[in-house]
Length: 632
Image (spheres, rainbow, N blue to C red):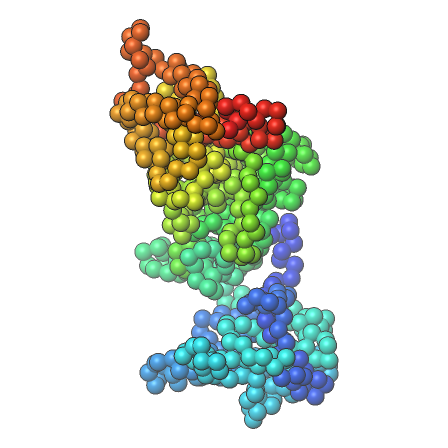
């Protein structure tokens, strides 16, 4: 079904109308005059990045595995100039001879296509390019040099290119094309028509040798069946640079009834091309795909333009957009269409030459939008306003969106590179299907919280929105939860785990105030958070005794004298929520807390800290109230 829906997407979006061309990055333009001579010291650069600007370039269907095949008008160093990308690579004599022969064949193929175009549609522009090529046999390009860096910064040899402006730059796997007297040949209508004709002839020639049969994707009989499915899928993490396949059979154990390669899953060549083109289109567009770590998610709707849905901002949720979406999820969407239209999402990962489908979702657009609305509503948690930050250098850090899948998933690991593929995939599923993420995620989230409290002196708990929003969502989506976590502090709950977290936050704040917010080294929260969240009964009696010293110190302070009464009232208000073992006895703390209870403990600690911080920040702006204890 996945391949059929991708095929339908390609047909409905007219992605098959011009398969002779595809977007390709071209970094260098050989600027020529009418005689085919280079203008300037070397090629012109097309963009600032290492790939260059994307152009609509001719795309051949001939297989490149055997070598000796090049693209028309735009290709790399070997095809255009016949130069080996690494002349010093160690290899045997026979292997070097084969490589040299392949390089020569590839260059010959490139210029043979130029000559064919010159014969089919002669013009001064193509004549100039042909003249440039004919000079390469006797005049190697002076703007290319193999060797070490001139400034001696690198001992490794490489290809160096002198640009039109005279500067020298190191070459990578970059493409070249041509412009003659200001006219870019990639945009020449006559040459594009020539290539469409050539491409159609290539396709027809290839299909002549294909077997015929029933296509499993379209259901049509007597179709020319593709022996392999092309083009390859590109852009999926952990796949090869030239792409990978979703459908492939390369070992006898995967075959049956003597069928070879993809004939074990008979698909019309047109249908195979369509679903591959559709998937490459989705992966290449930011409004249709998201990539996190080792996974890639693609999504689309059968009829509704994706730009009219909220799915495009799933990984870059702006707080204002999220608030508006939670209030009015179907704003800008035709509700009748949403009820009947279908929404699709597929989560992909790579395994060298193959693409792995980790998850596949089908739902109505209405269901998917409602699930996404519930996702963001469940993530809402109150956070004090952030202080202004110093500007960070551009490109040094991934753009921060606390409610994005990326940052939510990163709360489970110390560094993003350690993120397991199944974590973001699981969160995507929860967002689009309304499922509950696994309780197993609670442990790494809490472990990382404890680690940061203890070891990261720059960690600011009240601004760790991603961690506590995800904790809240996971706990609230459990079917047998003892309490519902609200976006803001819940002061009247009798849940002992949540109240233990609140109590630790109050005791930690009292310690900070007793030291006039100049405490050096780990405090109550850092030292006791881990033990208190697992075995409260073993810690809180000690902390309450220690707190008496803090209250005495606050009472004697010139700055905070009198505040100890407010703190004591806060503590007593929380202690009254614990049930004593018997009347007249002190409150009884839980001996142990299970994993879900530890999550509620962390949320109680966070929400009490956030509420107190927000109150202090708000009252700092109100001079008439600044003298009250809770505001200092």
